[in-house]
Length: 461
Image (cartoon, rainbow, N blue to C red):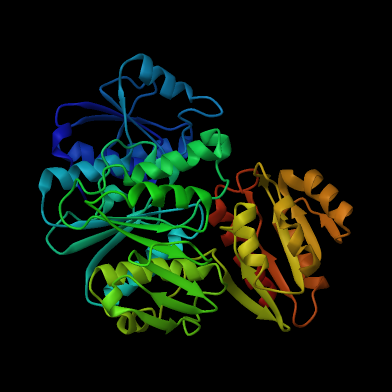
């Protein structure tokens, strides 16, 4: 567990006692901070109390540590945030604590921060697998798996790989990773950030202090979207950082600039002009879909930054198993393939699923994002039938009717899956790609994906 010593004798209030909240509370207690916590969910309060965290409903002290899901600004600040500001409390998150531990201990560890609207979990897991295969000592965590404050203490030659969300970045003030990666920016979480511009600005804060830390200072940026290009244009003028562009489309990049491009399953390495290479990535069979090309390119760039030859990196990708709920093939029943892409919580992510298949029985719905599924009309001819769940039913059914897509509404996921399985023929795909948040019927997208897997496995039996 990490221990931020500068918080000794300070009163820290933790609001939200999930995995990261409890990990932060225990780490702060370890260094002598006075820690109290609260959660609106009784079960979480009971668990926190059972592991030695003092509960206090009226949170007042020096510092507030809210869960990343607590609204800071939009649609309006949570009352806990408003009270903390009124009381002059500092408001930070666990990733800020993580950075402060590294600053305090100066033990020679390096860290890689990966963000983006889509693909960050897969990229973080793939980069970790690659570095481990190349005999690096790696610790993976953040928004994926292990909370940041539960990771091992820093030491020389340890490389941290952290997935960081916009919610986590918004709760920081001194981030200085050695390698900062932004894969892509598309409309998402606008209800929490107000506008796409503000969402992109929060993500860009990951790069604000790049070059001020020790060791490497590298920015790896996807330039296929406007926010990415704008960030690239801003950063490539700075002389104290190294910048690498990721491109799946034609981009007007200076020929001397480091880049990794992927076109037609060919990865073109131009990170070091004297060591240019071209590699076939169709062999990375564990990652389905063209959208994973960007994830592969980003992990490849990380490997090159750490001095690995291109051919060795491709070998290190062998044996990689993608994280659950991301284009996860659950089963084949009577030649019908069942695919769990519960992580496709917005239209852009769902598009990446839909483009991979034909003859689709599409399970879609939940709490719709601002853009709904109108951006997905081009994929509707691939859909044999749509099975709509959740609060999006009326909105999505209206659009499907207008576009001539066969569809039905279902009260729960099980009924949708069972009917899809019954209607599908050999060669068809039953695809869970909801294009929506899950919170109307499930705790999170993982719970939704787990439910889908359980239903399909029972059908297989």
